[in-house]
Each structure stands twice: as structure tokens, then as C-alpha cells.
Image (cartoon, rainbow, N blue to C red; front, side, top):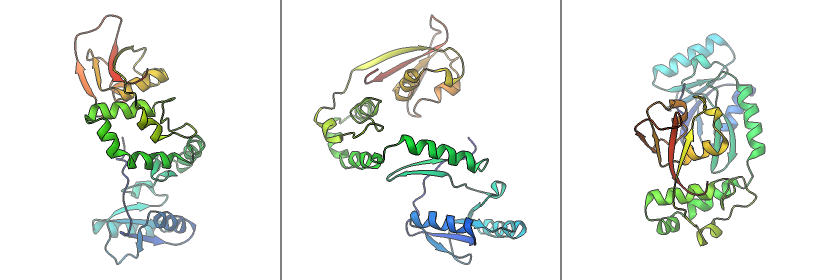
Length: 251
């Protein structure tokens, strides 16, 4: 992983923007959407965007800003960037960021356009409704593990809150959350390539509470699980290399 993806809250916070022309204006609009306070080079800020066309001037500006401890994005100059600005799919408050580390803005844009078509316009409404219902969800599921499993099951494809469905209804789900019992599934691995997992197997691993394997399961496949899922290493199992998945919810 070449960079750590983060979402920065910039509402009312200063960001330096240097340069003019179309590139600078597009960054100005983006910063304004995020609520940032755009300031000039003399001001104090933690972040800066340099959209200067001349190479020598841009390099000098970046060096000066970095000397002040400011993190810099240099437009169209990935080698000079401390951070990059991704292509964004905005379903406020849901944000999806697609970055290539500056390798290809065109590829990031193409992926964003594909994802835009997939995601319903009302996705943000679902996120807001879940946030508003968080106290009721905690009362229904006092234990954190049970709460997470119930939400995972509801958000599964075909579930009550399937985020790609036409109109997921949080109130209907709260009326009948129907949490399922624990399920144990063994996945026999066909290769070390996670792309060889079936869609269902990939969903099982992504939702797992616990992954058990004989120590030979590829890291690329185990990394498809949540970071907080337990990993247990045991004896080799019959039937070839595999992963045992313990989860709750519909299969």
C-alpha cells in the first residue's frame, strides 16, 4: 500500500492554494466543497496545494512549504506530492475515494464513472438513517459482536438494508432485525489469488468474526477479512489448504 487513505475534515480550516488557471480553479472548487478556508502562502496552514505551471517555480514553492512542515500536493507532479487528491464519488455523507498515487488520473476518473452508475442517489439517506438509529440499534443488540453481525446481515446483498437496493428501509429492519445464529463455513482454496474466490466466498471472508487456517493460507486472501477478525492457526485440515470461517447471518 503506497499511501494511507484518510478523510480530512477541513471545515473552516486554512489550506494554502498557489497558482492560477484551470487546475488551480478546479482545486479551489474542491476545497470550497469541503468547507476549507483558502489562504495565501504567508498564512499558517497544515496543507497546501501547488498548481503552478512552471516546473522550477513549482519545485521552489514545494520546497519552501515543506521546509515549514506543511504537507503538499503538487498538481500533475506525483514525485513532489506528500498527498494526492483522489477521484470522488459523493453520496454525502458517504464518500468513496479512488486513488492511484498519481500514476493515472484518467484511470481514477474512469473507475469513478463506473462506480457512480452503480450507487443509488439515496445511499447517503441510508447512512444518515443508520446514524440516527444508532441508540435504538444498541438497545436491540447490547453486545458489540451481535450488533455488528446483525448490521452485516442486513447490509448483505438481498438483505433488508442492501445499499444497492431501490429503497432500503431502516425502520422496517428495526421492527424485525432477525439476527441469525452462528454459521461455520469451510472454504477450500483453489489458488493463492483472491480473485479466484467466488463472490459468496469473498463475502463470507469479509464478514467473518473468526478465520481459522493451518498457517498456509495466503496473506492476500486473509487480508480480505476485517482487521479486527480473529485469526487462529491450527492443524492442517483434510481436503487441501483452506480457511474455516465463523460468522453470523444468511449465507
